[in-house]
Image 1 (cartoon, rainbow, N blue to C red):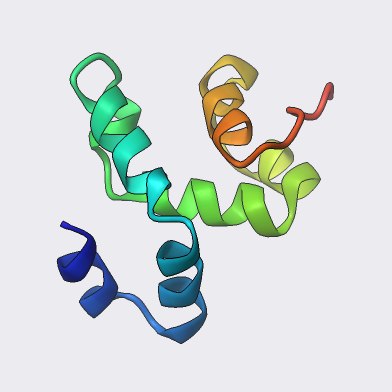
Image 2 (cartoon, rainbow, N blue to C red):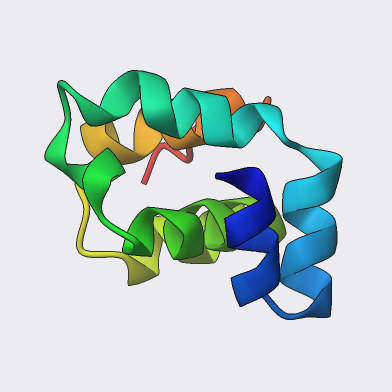
Length: 81
C-alpha cells in the first residue's frame, strides 16, 4: 500500500508519508471501525493537521473527536477550540 500511495503523491507529500510510514498502519488499524479512515481524504486531514494544526481544526468539517486520533498519531495535542 505504501508504494502505491507514494506513486500517487507529489514530492512534499511523498516525503511526509515516507518519513512517517506508521501513519499508514494507523489508517489500516482504524479503517474497520471508523468510516473516516476508509476515505482518501484522511490523508489530506493528516497532512493538514501536521502542517497547520490549528487551521486544520477550523477548516475540516470533522468533530474534535474525529480529529483527536489524527493529532495523537502525529504526537500533537488536539486544539481546544
